[in-house]
Image (tube, rainbow, N blue to C red; front, side, top):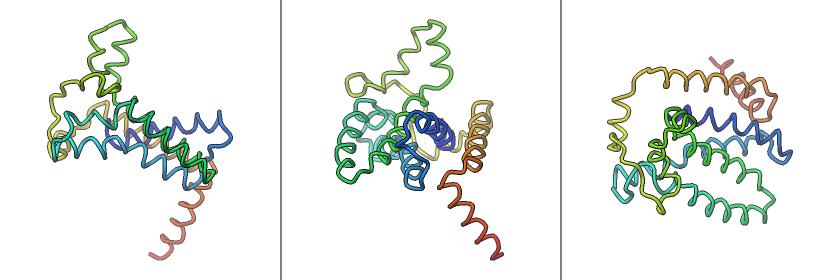
Length: 190
């Protein structure tokens, strides 16, 4: 999944979490934590795998749910001191939704249909207990972006982003109001 797809999916997941828990609102801090969390696994794994080759794959350490569990537990303990568990929850929604959405529709549909060969693409979720799958294009940022094509899957991610941004703007959330005020004041300057 591309960065905009991860962001859109994470925001829609945050909407579900905010419906379940009244402690998670759409404040500016919560949305910023979500944005960072939704990109976090790639910000860690891709450079460490593609640029300095410390990790075996662009989906390993930070894509692992084991790593997420340990780090989020530590962050939640620290955030309790400052009564900011909402930021950790939002960051965690972004992080976990990123890792799960990297499974992709082919893997998920295959597993629902009983195609157990798709399990091989899920092993990064338990790295380092299980090895990361062998990805054919685990090379570099330049290679990935040079191969970007407007496939139905990429187009669907843009549409999902449009939906998420639209919902966010009409939600009445503090973060959306802040952006609307900023846009109005800066657009009037031109």
